[in-house]
Image 1 (tube, helix red, strand yellow):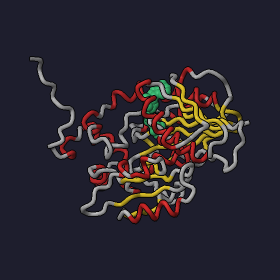
Image 2 (cartoon, rainbow, N blue to C red):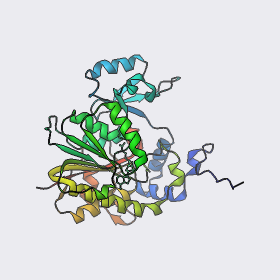
Image 3 (cartoon, rainbow, N blue to C red):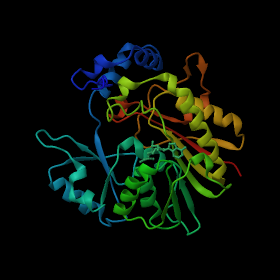
Length: 335
Ligand SMILES: C[S@@+](CC[C@H](N)C(=O)[O-])C[C@H]1O[C@@H](n2cnc3c(N)ncnc32)[C@H](O)[C@@H]1O
């Protein structure tokens, strides 16, 4: 009989006791060694993530009515201020909130999506009316939360390419796109770095593969597998994808770069390296309604972060909005 592997994450030991010293050391530095703030962060990520959903206006033309129907099922609902037709669902004591089991979900009238993950699409400035030549690329798309969000905003006009490198992840992407009723989407199964062409798309979303240190509330095991040594390889991949995404963007077009990581090597430092190589890229001010953004980074591991990156990009700490952690940068390609 083979030796049994030690589980990476022990669900019976409190999460707080499974934090690696390197995790504490790095995150404490991100809070300027303010133990109180660090504790607030840790206490927040010890709790499961707050649920939220979007109404899919491709399938539901009367969002108000649908919302009332969901409320009638005894869900407590509050709007997500920074996203269209999106709502938090508060926990009601004694009731299980399983939005994925709702009939409305099955019919594709709602899409369950974490509230911070809605930010990069909101920042793409997709016009209300678009013509058939308007093209959007979602470079790393599966399982399709943001693809379906873009699809909703495009209202089945123009063309949306949903690309995903991992063939095993194409299935879930396809199911989500079918369920939500987008008819203007084509799926491709390519390495984003190898997508050919130049200045094709009016908008590009790069929701990059990352370490996931912002989504510990969703995947608590991340706290046990956290390993900053992996960040170098990850950030090199992110930069390459970023560069290709930008080359695929038309002049005057907008792209967003996002991760669900809190590690500066995957966020501010990637944006810094990208901007240095691309003088025709303009970092735009990423602003979203009522999104609280505290603890912006100005420096990490003795490396200064430029003021424009600190000020203009979005670093969302879970404890500030009771969400996951997330990062977004918005870029315009100069004409
Ligand atoms: C953060 S997830 C995307 C989540 C998705 N945007 C959503 O909102 O549902 C990153 C995705 O990038 C894919 N990926 C990793 N390397 C890639 C590459 N070189 N080119 C394209 N996609 C890649 C992963 O398989 C993964 O599905």
